Every structure is written in structure tokens, then in C-alpha cells.
Image (cartoon, rainbow, N blue to C red; front, side, top):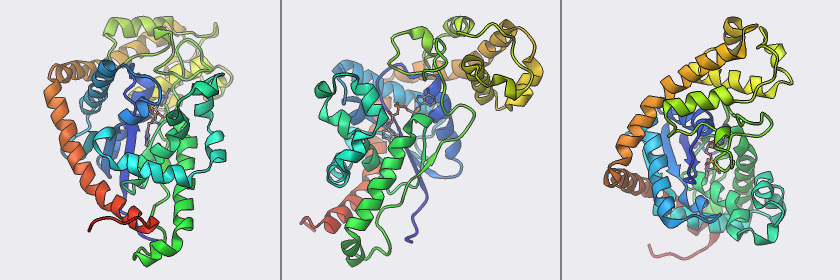
Length: 346
Ligand code: TYM
């Protein structure tokens, strides 16, 4: 098997309302990866327009995700932070992958079914082909590790299927161009931590999401301390007190979710948390959770606001990151063109 350089890639859509789920399931993980890997973090604006986005709102949302990355502790100098549309190779490789992926594979994607809703005929072609672009995002850097929340698992499996089929379909040409055994790595999903699937504060069976019409369902990364405390106070729970053992969280989705959030924010084990709060009133636990959430998020929110006040600086970070991303993506895309049999100027 070809040895691939270990590299992390992940992306976040600039579709507004960045929330605690995005932070705990993804951004907090991105920060941790920096010590171990070379990382590329992308604001995936081309994914965002698979559903209608107001152009001014989109620009603001791109800057907001960038600010959230930096404010959370991602170092855009040591690693790469950029927006997808500035690196044309993503869209170029996505086209090749549209021709590798099969309709049947994409038809099975649950996220398309959820997002398209009842009227599939009215969904954009982009929304259907979305996972092929996602595979291109990762593989245009031949990235090997992809930290994401649980909801992206199926898309990552599809990325692996696309990489495998490309490697098989073009095996002879890949070898003829001097690549030993397969051109693309099979990217490994890193779905880790205590909160890989943060649920809505209003309904423990639904995931916390940017598009939930109820703002009370999520904690936004831009919420102030009072709003955070009030949302946690109002979070749905059942009438029972918190259990003292982990077993007791089974079948209690809302309680389970709040304890998982506590665990992810504090780095403490669930058993340890239940040891402290089990048997007590929910309100005591909720106060502690609100304090913890505010303590963790408010320095990030403050820093995001400071960064957002200087859009030119954010745009410069994105331009610099995009230029560095292109130096990795361009030679890989050139090899793809050679492998597929396109002619290009040399
Ligand atoms: P997006 O923008 O919906 O979400 C960004 C990241 O946040 C995670 N996440 C959650 N984690 C825990 N609990 C939740 N409730 C929750 N909601 C969201 C997501 O799993 C994700 O990691 N398709 C991707 C963006 C993307 C991408 C990529 C990711 C495009 N290309 C290439 C990795 C690699 C998406 O829509 O994420």
C-alpha cells in the first residue's frame, strides 16, 4: 500500500447559527488535532449554496466560521484555514467524482433525504451531489484523517467508497503514472469525544442543528451569558432526579444529552459527574452546567466579536490559507488529470 503523509482535513458550512454541537463535535476536536497532525480546516462555502443563501449573509457567515476557528484556538499560521471557493481544485475534483460515484450510492444518503424533505424534485442537483464534493474536499489533499460529528459518518463512508472505486477503475493508469498501489488514501473518520452527537435542548431525539426553527433548541456560539443560562434552565428534562450511575441514563435522552455536554466541556468522566450530581435536583446540575458553558464559550465569543470587527483581517487570513492550500491541491489535481487521461499544458 502506498504510504500517505498523515494529514487532517475537515470543514464547516457557513450557514449561520454555529452552535455548541459544532463546537463540541468538531471545532474543539480540530483544536486538539493541531499538536499531532498537519491540519487543513475549510469553510465550505460551496456546500452552503446547495440550499439558497443570501449573498451578504453568506459573506458574513464565512467570516463568522473563520472567526470561530481562530477564537477557539486554531492557529492559521501553523496550519491552514481557508474558504473552499478560493481553491478551484475542489470543484474540479468533485466533477471527476460525480463521474465515479453511482446514483445508487447517493440515493442512500440519509442527509439528502432529510434536507430535501418531501419535495425531492425541487432540491438542487448540488444538494444531491453534495457528498461527492465532500469527498473531493478531503481527497484533493489526500487527507488521511477527518474529525467530524456522528452525523457525517455516512458521508465519510461514501468518500472511502469513491476513493476505492477511483483506485480500482484507474489502477493501470495509476501504476503507469508511477503511483505504487492506489492513488487516494481511504480517509479515516475521527468521531471522538463525549459529544459526537449533541441533541436539541427541546427534544432529546433530535440533533442540535443550525436550521432548527426554535432558537431555544441550541446554544449558539454567539449567545451571551444570560441567553446561555436561560436556554439551559429551560432545557427539557424528565421529572426524575439525575441518576447516580451511568446505567440510569438509558432511555432518558434529555438527561443523557446534558450530562454528555457537561462531560465534553469539562473533560470529566460521566461517572464522576454523576457521582457529584446524581440524586440531586436537576436545577442544581443545570446551574453548574450553565456556569461551565459560559466559562468555556464566553472567551471564545468575545474573541469572535473582536475578530469580526476587522473583516479585512479575516479576509487576509483566508486569502493566505487558500494560497497555501492550492500549493498542495494543484499537483494532486494535475496527477488526477493525467491518470484520467486528460491533456494539460506542462
Ligand atoms: P456541518 O457544517 O453541518 O457541521 C460542522 C461539523 O459539526 C458537526 N456537528 C455536530 N457534532 C455534534 N453534535 C451535533 N449536533 C452536530 N451538528 C453538527 C458535524 O458533524 C461537522 O463535523 N458536510 C459537512 C461539512 C463538510 C466536511 C467536508 C466535513 C464539507 N466537506 C469534508 C469533513 C470533511 C457539514 O455539513 O458539516
